[in-house]
Length: 289
Image (cartoon, rainbow, N blue to C red):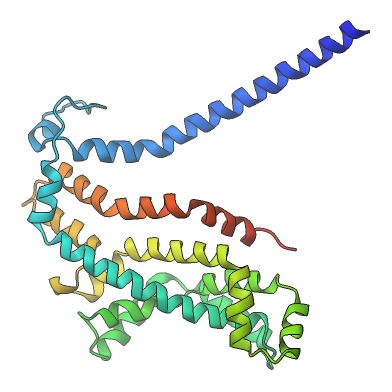
């Protein structure tokens, strides 16, 4: 009897090990596929221009790494200034957006007014409008207001997001109504309730939204290229394009990769620091009750 039980237990243990082995193997392969572009970008950035162009067959290693591309990336164009402009644009846009979407989400989640559901449905229908139409409309509006080549023109069209309002509204709706009614009985104003109760409870989701917005602003390309032609307002995306155009028909790929690594590093560090809060926010947004 004991022998039969040990046999079953051994077979179960073997199956569990095989299952875990398959899972870990698949995850390892997937991780390699995901991380390989980053490895290739970093590898290319430390290759010399002549060494890179002399490779008829791309090599997955280099015997003569150099950091010259990184120094050239900041001298060939005003990449440092573009980084500063991007930081200003990102911080201002994200801060204003958080204020706008928080107030909008609170209104849809807690306040009662006539036609709220209809207004919210119409608001969500804006997500079906192609981005190209929105860009054209924003360009005409900003141009008519004489805000081209200004930080205001860069920032204003990006201070709201229907998706983020919807995501935050759904999280606010998870908070029991009893807390709101109890706070109103105690004489708490709506803004104080929002600031002291709802925002702390939904902090993981708000952190996730902030990180996603920072990434979106940092990688913004179409709108900055469209609304600015003054180098004083260029962002890092403009800097990459300027490096490409300065090649006189021959693109310096290692130099461009060095610039991409330099401007990607802050985002990577940001994600590493806040990865737990991002995952917590995504998990909270994907569950109900």
